Length: 370
Image 1 (cartoon, helix red, strand yellow):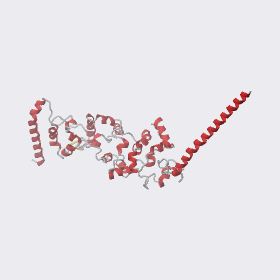
Image 2: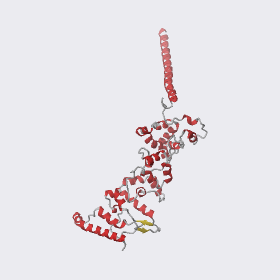
Image 3: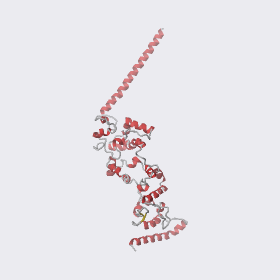
Image 4: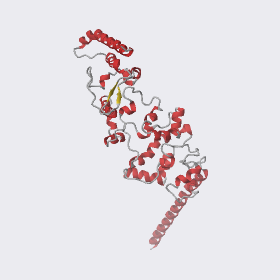
């Protein structure tokens, strides 16, 4: 007899002995009392801790039935003392019922819906997501719960926070490669910066929408504004928090706001943040590779304004509101007209009022003499 079979027989004997010793307590609790989770799980792991345990599927694929006992016990479910049969509800004894899956992916698609037993709110959110839509359309590779969280080794999905983009990387590797070299991704992955956005901060978690729709495009400035209007965060990096106000105040932002409120599903060709700054590959504005680097601005503007000349982007004030420190010439010109225009209009109004008063008095005097 091989050593592995000897170990398994010893484990089964220990499980059986434990069950016998706990039988009086089980009978005291009632005839249907289940054994403690640790005892039940150990019975499962006496076989499933064998790395070579597998089953052949009709597709010809080999489905591994191995579960790393240490990794499971350290997982969220293991720490909570979850039973194996809480998910594998059709397992009541041995031999187990035969698998109905035709291939490995079919097995995952059959099993993942069991997550809603405990996580119904999250499961309901996924039903409206782009992933669920792709799955319903016949894309069997669209991610389900276990693709992101794993089946047996579930751990907190944001600890460390860099785990989030690395999870998305399983399907979106090209986008991950762009993100890791961006100002956001480099700060997160290289410096563990807690302030920069990860995938879920922009796209959501379980209710991920379709980022190619007109509705997503129109709401994208508000997504960027969640961080870029936060004074506490932006003050750390010397970044203006007037970004949304200055954007909405100009033609681009005003048009987008109108479309977002009146026709959110209609495509608009007015630029939003990522048209100028990039999507997943955003760079610092002083990075020569940045699309909004001063020397690159003309090319960026020419995407929408092909006739733009070198003077065209010179008017851009980098989302700052003019002040004595930032763009003082613009500030003082604005201040001059802020004072001049009310004075001119006020003087004209006073002149008209005095003239009208004089005319009324003259007419009254003329009528009195008559």
